[in-house]
Image (cartoon, rainbow, N blue to C red; front, side, top):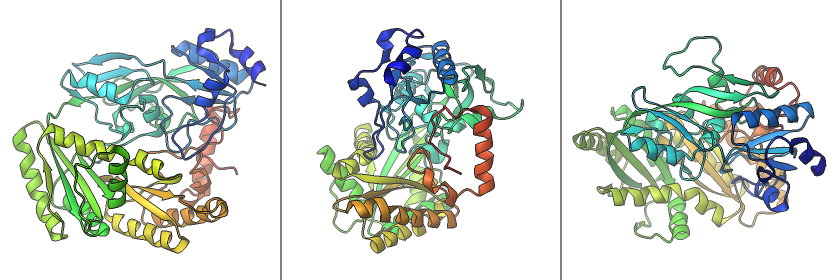
Length: 464
């Protein structure tokens, strides 16, 4: 099978960018989702939109599944080739094509590392605000596919809020632009919004025009400890009610922070035994004098919920140390145990109820969870650790517990995923939050754009 598939694509790109070796296929059989492994038949590394088009056109002709991938840092299995076929790696399409300082736009290829773009525009006093925890390794194409968010989404929004226009290769190999490089566009259907977050199931994004802002150069960061995790969650909505808009507001259980300290070897932060949760709160501004008034408005909120002593990170080095710990939490949990991560999201006022329900369900079923996330926008990452749980529990009972969590999420006005996407692992739970009519509408869109079903099959939509 592999030989025949390789032959189909062998005349379309040079042999040094078309792979069927065990080493390359094994590398592309995993992302950061749990311990899942799905092996493609062949891996292609195009460097132009025209090459992507030719590869997809050939796959369409021969009914070969196509799974796009970049850095493979995803947490929902979106980049896994669950039906084999062609793994389309876009990592070599990694150019920042243009930074427009007049119109505040950047035109980029999908293989650009997110932090590389942030740094490039910052040199021109511009700001690209989408800020995934894995920004140093994830690509813009992956961010677009999953509609990624991150800590600063609370103030600046998620990926979809920054996209003006996309170049997309459709399932038959045709190339379209979904919008225009303008701030306003009411010309027909919003195909740009449709493609962002579609996880490669509707088309392959080969270029994006992104919005930029003037760079806010000043930041203040506070680490706020609480004896009670629900109190930390309760503080989130109250900060906004007090009239403050933080640029980031992160929640971490004590276990999340202590595991990260052990994982990184960084014990500079002294964790008191009575503190069970923390909020990491950032404000930003164009003037240094903008910062302290925002912090001062928040302090009474924290104090009313019996917070501990607030740590002010006053230097860039101190701030970077705290952010370093926060951004490594996911890796630290994974190093502790095989785990399942559920990317829950509710209106932020309901975070206390969500966290309490997660712990109650965990106690009922007998599993340990470590919770953290982007509290400012109601996004709680629930990490369920396998520890010494049996295969039977992990495979049969745990999905029932997860379904209970998602049922609570739905009852609180939330949904399955805030930023990690549905991919493979959340697909079985889609019926809990989407009506039959909703799912059928999405299936109709999928059928219209990909009638053969070759683009990233097995993702997002459950079987009928």
